[in-house]
Image (cartoon, rainbow, N blue to C red; front, top):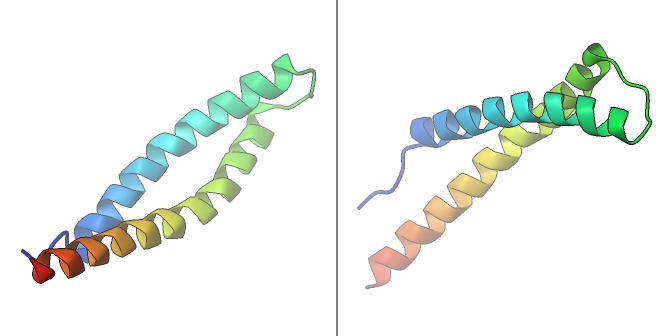
Length: 77
């Protein structure tokens, strides 16, 4: 078994990140306002965007690492 392809790892990471971005924008907006921190939707979107820039390579690297470990340990059996 060769594991998940790099293309599907990236696709999965992007899908995960897009849904995370949408959640982050709304959670930033409502939670920060609830805590009394003034924030508008544009600012919440900017925070979400910056976190997304970090999230895509992080998710891809973690996915590829686990895929590598899976393939490595499956070949030992």
